[in-house]
Amino acid sequence: EAGVAQSPRYKIIEKRQSVAFWCNPISGHATLYWYQQILGQGPKLLIQFQNNGVVDDSQLPKDRFSAERLKGVDSTLKIQPAKLEDSAVYLCASSLKLGWGTEDIYEQYFGPGTRLTVT
Amino acid sequence: GENVEQHPSTLSVQEGDSAVIKCTYSDSASNYFPWYKQELGKRPQLIIDIRSNVGEKKDQRIAVTLNKTAKHFSLHITETQPEDSAVYFCAASTGGDSGYSTLTFGKGTMLLVSP
Image (cartoon, rainbow over all chains, first blue to last red; front, side, top):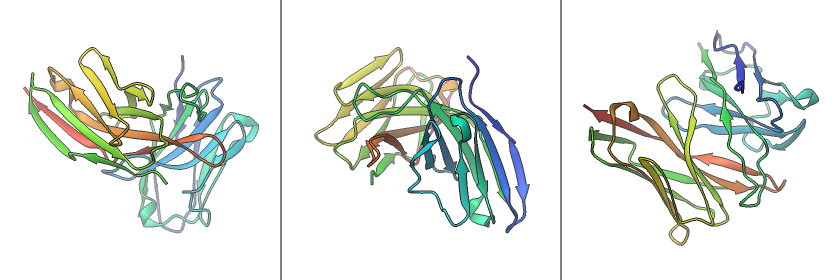
């Protein structure tokens, strides 16, 4: 099966500029995640969608970050305006679903990521 | 929220030796514990996972153990090979108010296997 697709793979922008990332999840996966991975750290969840609804955006800096998943398939993550500390790899992941029950959990598949450098 | 601590941050072993990476979590309600391997410049990939109703799981050279009472879980790699060199992340899944669970990752362990 085709994996999670992301674009662009690399982006260099100056601070205060805006940037957008795109993600296409695995076909049929209802749950989509955006993670931020700063060099030397583990992925940090920014936002989680179930179909086209947001189920967790508690760690999303909403003053500058926004995300949408129209029609419950593709998703875009936007940063406006960017800061130096936003330099990181932005990973998109998808899963069939991620429920609460012990048996209601499905593997998350990650995309290749977008490496953002803010200068 | 959930907090996952992982150690060591770096682990160097000789080929053929065993490697053990340990993680602790804070939320006793967490019920799913995956381990991801991330090679340099690549995406994280699931290598093994364990659910809270199981104490141990093994897949060829890798195994994971879970101690719910102590709230810690460990990854064991036996007969290490140079291609095992990568960064390994543990994670814990905990539920949110929405009813959907989310993953919290540890900071990672860089495993170096020398020939």
